[in-house]
Length: 324
Image 1 (cartoon, rainbow, N blue to C red):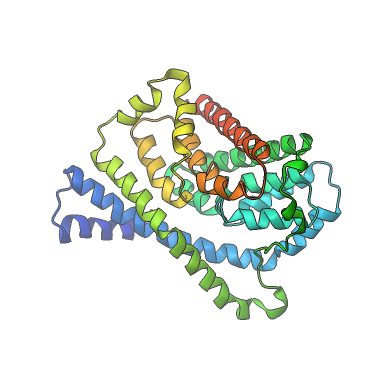
Image 2 (tube, one colour):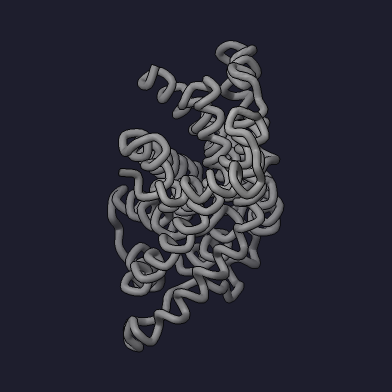
């Protein structure tokens, strides 16, 4: 039985009972979709944010940062940075303060970019939601894809020796790094702070959730069958890169994008194209580019965006091939 079935019953009652909408109408389908997905995603975001806070409490940022800075790991450091990016609940903009802190701590530029790339691309919230929406196999492929892009992207940037394109103030600034409380105080004492931080995270992304679910509900209820399949495939093999480029200005949190992804797949868009569209929205953020421009110079910024863009497009093509 679906653990969210009670939410579906409540959404049906609101849409078809309280608002007296017809289940066969486009509006009824859209409103029911909005009520159900909004409640489900808000609950998951809040619960998973608390669990992530507890994990981060026992896995302090400073300890990982210092370990990466003082050990030569022959490539394993890229993997560890990518894993750390995957378990930290930061969007592309929120990852930047930690990015600065890593550089100041002496962590190599490539390893730092492996974290910066993977942190927004891989979301534990999106992973949990994708299991419910598409199954464990697709969710696992999503995590593997983000990890590969992060590790390869960081490795390439590291080999290009582009440290000169980091602004001078970064090496001198006292960067503020987001960390968990030390375990010295005990989890019981820290738990109220974790809950408050989870509430702040939810409050911060709530508008993106409403907007994303609203778009997804409109697609689900009103868009004719095969509409997006026609739009995203009309350019043939170039439809996937076109979808990635169109997604860049549409910055949103993964939790808000997944309802759109669900609707696109339901309307016939290939999973690889839809997933590339989602990863471009969360990973190629225009607001993050504006902030990063103050931290790194244009050649490094363009290299970063170019590598991530190519990686997402290639992963999209691979997914379309494997899941065809």
